[in-house]
Image 1 (cartoon, chains in turn brown, yellow):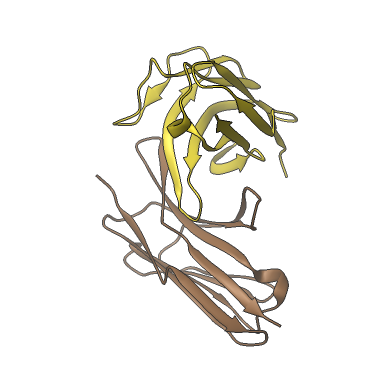
Image 2 (spheres, rainbow over the protein chains, first blue to last red):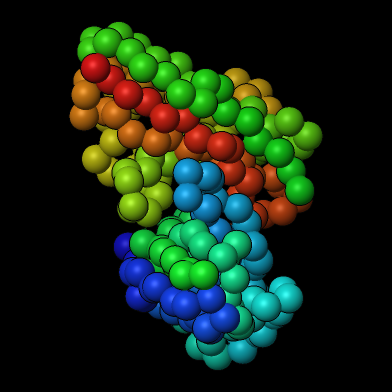
Length: 109
Length: 116
């Protein structure tokens, strides 16, 4: 079945440093979604990418979808303490989404 | 964005009892609802997919007789953990998907189940 892998599993940065998480799928995806889960909270939808090579920005967050539509990345510029949490990518398949294992970001003030 | 509620947020029960968790889409009609289980510091494990008016589709390894799912309306799905045991203790999260936003899932706040 479809597998979605994320790296790194954990990332600890100093406030102001950049952060990137990578998502790779074993199969070509029609789209990919990104979610953020704050500690103790539930996942919140961030964005969906659909087109090959697509790049979308949300303030300090930049999302990319690979040309082959099998990988994606989330980059945060100049992290802030409010960015802490676990970032999941999810790829659709067979009417459901397969979530990656997530990358947990901690930010030291 | 769309709002999904879950009730209760926390429940503590004795081993052998059954617990029902409700998931409601408050401001949209959810054609599909998903139930996930999440262990500490781990990813979301999909348990089952439920479509309104039809039987839930369970993921491999999930016991359908233990985790009863009912999706009686376009705004309500319930998960009943029957004869709960301590190993069932976990964070259960539902999500709902609208026919208008095909892939975007709106998550409920989750239910923390502790079985003594």
